Length: 271
Image: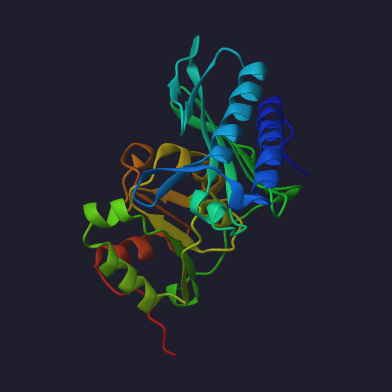
């Protein structure tokens, strides 16, 4: 079984069309024309081409909907209640270095509530999709967050953007606490895939400060529909606005939040 609603079909089709160019460009990554936007944040010609394809395909199918896109910003729609939130290439630095771990992320908001999300990993041909109230899926398989209940058994993802370090000097201390308490800490370079991996039970949790809405939106719905929790790092609701996100399975969200805040080491490893 998988999700077959019209909007999921539109979003998945758009992602797959944009991915064709990304995969082709990834094979010629050394020849890409690259411009630097800021610290640890690069944009490539491949990124821009993928966004153009996504804009064309989404607008063709839903011409009245608004768009919020990483490169071109916000385009208001005639239908102000609906908005696509799009990252054409999440994991840009991986892509530019020839690391095969990146994705296209598309979410749909209805009246500012996330109602559909698709994250497509073109290298592994994995389509993560979720729709509000309909569950989360990887290709045709239903997803569920992991059942592990001890931090000592948990694999947790994070990200270390330079801008977040400048704004949050306590972040490295939180990383040290997580390394001491969890089975393993992972930094993959793609927040969208990190959230998808929480939904799929590959990670028990993920946190990162300083993200953008397009990094988070689709993955947030995946986590929720797979039975997990997603909040700000301190447990609030406004993660899309703040960019600070903590996602985890239902058993470890609270312990991980306490650990990151320094309110206790949680379930420390004994070996």
